[in-house]
Every structure is written in structure tokens, then in C-alpha cells.
Amino acid sequence: MDSFKFPLQLRWADIDANFHVRHSVYYDWAALCRISFMHEKGLTESVYHQFNMGPILFREECRFRREIRMGDSISIDLQLVAARRDFSRWTIQHSIWKSPDIEAARLTVEGAFIDLHLRKLTIPPALAQSVFELMPRSAEFKWSDS
Image (cartoon, rainbow, N blue to C red; front, side, top):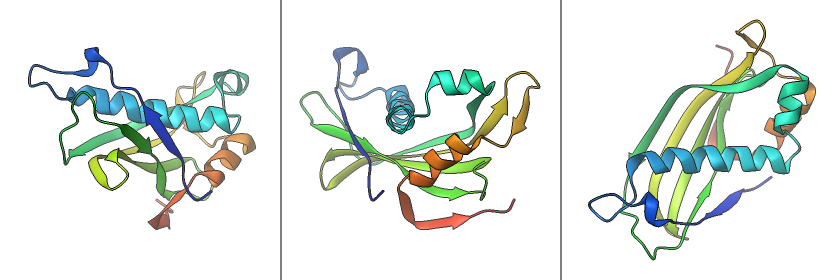
């Protein structure tokens, strides 16, 4: 897949005292984008329940580049930046766009899958691996063995 872009709806509740988007909203948008991509490809909560597993994050970082204010038309995308070949660990990058050519923020997450019964990291089932295989990859994508 070449790209996955998700339109965002800016709400009054997303605005802070400086009349631009609150910092924590960016993280919520990134989570919404990842979950929407996975749902679209068939990796839903029922699959997580079936396999007693779920995604977890180790690190989440955002670089704010431009203000987003009420009235801006915004969208978010995602790209796989790095992964183990079994997709047991991965890094996803999101760009938040306030127009097709103005990047407002770049958010990076590092994550894995956890076995919900053992409370230990696990290798995801084939369905989850196939969904991550379909994820758009950044130009800098690399396989990771560590």
C-alpha cells in the first residue's frame, strides 16, 4: 500500500487557551489513525480478544512544526519506519497535515504486542502480521533484528 491518509475533525474541545490544538490531542489522533488502519484491514478488538493479545507502546514522541487552529483542514497519515520480520516490534510514524503540503506535526511511536494472560511480549498471529505487511512504509524503512 502506497499511503493511508485519514481526515480529522477538529472540535472545540481540542483547542487550548492559546487557541490552537492541545498537545495531547495529537497523540489521540495518532492512535485513532493506527486503529482505523488496522480495523480497515481486519485487525479488530475481537481478533485481539481471540488471541488474548493487544498492541502496546514503549515510546511516543511528537515534534510540533506548525500551529493548527480552528478552521484548518487537517489529516493524518501513517508509515512503518522499522519492524522485526515477525512484526513483534515496530516503529510507526505519523504526519499531521494542515494542508496537502504543510506538515504541522510528526509523531513517532515504538511498540509491540503483549500476551494479555501472561503479561509478556509476544509474536503476533499471522493475521496481525499480514496487516502490518500491508502498512505503507517510509522511504527510510528498515528491518530490525534487535
